View 1 (cartoon, rainbow, N blue to C red):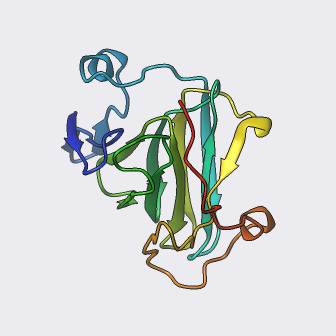
View 2: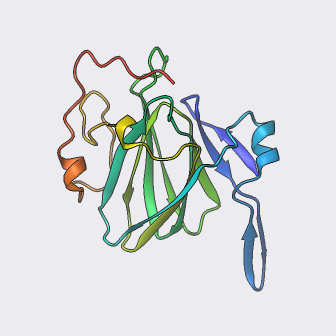
Length: 183
């Protein structure tokens, strides 16, 4: 595996080492020892699989507050997505900055998203599927949401007029006095 830094500390693009032959390919998507050597979280409490039936579906932007602030390792296993993380860490020099990357079933990449980031993605193709490991179990009472089109953040989603869940449709814009979360 190779680990590529991004402009925002706490987000890392992980390039998997692909071994390919006539039968197909093999890649290790997680190795505890390798992640430890990089100083990355290795706890896995939950593995989630999400499916988007239609191109344009947008899920997120969601985060969890302490003590259940979570790290995610996100991989697109079918189709393609635009994956986004927004820094909501209190006192972070990159507060409210975002990083986005295209992930797809044919590329050997995963996105590592540390605690204190709101995370979401948009399906760029029909029948897209995402698998992500999480360092903490889902805690609805500690969940926070950032509106996908919040003008304070300005994420540039590839598909206009996304398809949203009722929950994500009802998320308000961040209050002007939002100072972030502690992790």
